[in-house]
Structures are given as C-alpha cells and as structure tokens.
Length: 74
Image (cartoon, rainbow, N blue to C red):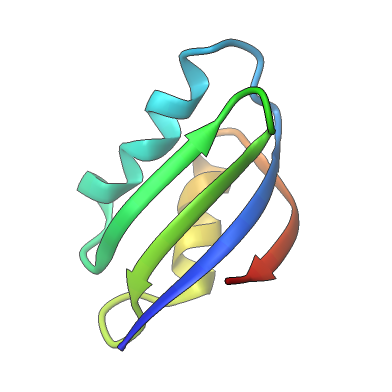
C-alpha cells in the first residue's frame, strides 16, 4: 500500500540539495517517488509502507545531514 508524506527540511543550502535528497529513491527499497524543493524547503515522498517505514526514510534523510522539522500526511 502506498503512502505519501510531505517533510519540511532544514539544512538545504543550495539548489543542488534537492537532487541529493531525491537520491533516497536509489538508497531505500520501497520509495516510489521523491521530489524536493529548495525554494519551499520541503520534500514529498511516496513510498510503499510494506517495504519501507517512515522512520527509515527520516533516518536516511538525517544521515544525509538534513533535519526534518515537520511531517504532513498527504
């Protein structure tokens, strides 16, 4: 079953940061789509919750050096 969340991200310091964040698609099995916006300082992640958890997604983003300020269910 797929689920979508919007994350408010702190720590994006340049327009290349969204591309780095979107690489989460390659790092975690179960990510269907990841789209980040430098201008909005947010990221929308669609994922298969039978393959990956929200906690795993958050941990991977924090491991990349970013901080999650808020999570909204879509």
